[in-house]
Length: 334
Image (cartoon, rainbow, N blue to C red; front, top):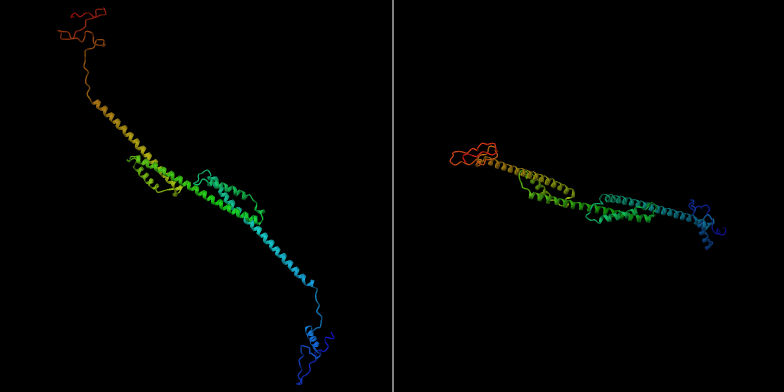
């Protein structure tokens, strides 16, 4: 250390200038003319003005904080990944449960519809089989436990359940529409039959005081029914058919009254004719029947000798009295 400072004079008290003012001390040591080594020594003194040696720390003491920090970061990242994975599984199971709930509701609606209308005819009869098959597949899905599924399985289940729900709803809607179409067509056919029957009755009915009002009412309803078809709906068609039936029945009753009155009138006319004939016969005079002779005394008929006019006499002969022999006496005139 003494060798390094050779040739370098440490700063001392500031020398007074010639003018008499004190001179400020310099921050750098003054260099002497001792040679190039003195310059290098002065530079080294400036770099370490205190003059102490630099102590190097061991390399292990400088690296262990970085290792601990990296371990902490890795652990934190792992925790975040695990948390995200757990959240993903939980969300996937929640989605699967929600999809299963939606499928259950759609399947219940299909079940209620099948129970209520499975005996009815559809415009598309094959829909009953399709809907029943769909429900069997739904039961297979609904029987799975979503709470024990992993994330991928739960996501796959949610997708299949959503598709099954859509298919079940679609088939149920189609079946309802097909049932409505079938009912509308049947109602339209029934109304057409009722209108045909009513028109036949109108054509065969004689209009008079008994039937005139019923004929007018039925014609008006038949004309109104002619503007309806299957698109009018089963409810409206059934209501119109009921009106046609009632009006036709009213006309049928009027025709019955008309027929009964015609029969009564015919019977009255026949009775009047018979009465007139009877009176006419009673008013004709009765001619007396001609007499052929007098009756006998005992009322059994004319006697053998009675009824014969005697020649030469002016009257009838009188039989001879009985002589007791049981035979009349001979006529003395004979």
